[in-house]
Amino acid sequence: MFGAIVLVIFLALVAAAGVLLYRIRNARFTRAWAPLVPVIGGRIRGDGGGAATSFLVGSYLHHDVEASMSPNAGAVGGVGETSTGVAHNAFEIKLGGVSGRSDWRLLGPRAGTGQWRIDTADEELRQRLAASDLIIRVAALGHPSHAITTVGLPVLRFVSGHAMLHYREDAGPVVVPSAQRFRQELDTLLGVVALNSSVNR
Image (tube, rainbow, N blue to C red; front, side):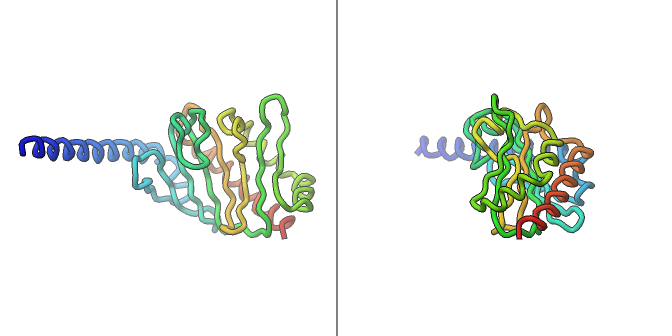
């Protein structure tokens, strides 16, 4: 009986500690998001779990935007495609309402190659994208880090089934980019939206 009581108390303390940790982490996320909130008129939401990822949801020039930060992603395995096995501050942007027929991915250059690569099952689309200024536009945002390229994650991809562009980067020593860079990234994605609608029909 005494052991059962101790166990109940222990489990209650563990649960309370978990809730407290979740709130502390989300408070840090809220402070980090603050400069970016006005850019997309965003609202912040948690991941509903261990507070490993935080989301900022809003809109930019009539497109739905979901940005996410995952500090120290990949250090122990991460979740889904964020997992790279290399610790980094993952920052991602998903832009909705993007028209296009076929899926494609843009992969950054791996060490020793120096070449960006467009991956799609539609060979004609690949040629049209390669002939466009897609790579120049995205490369202007900077060379993707080793944490992104080492396992071949796409820097940018278009998912036709979700009408979505998905951009990812390593935020470096910070957990989110500055408001100025965030706008630059969004404007770059809007340029890709226009490009995609013209070549991916």
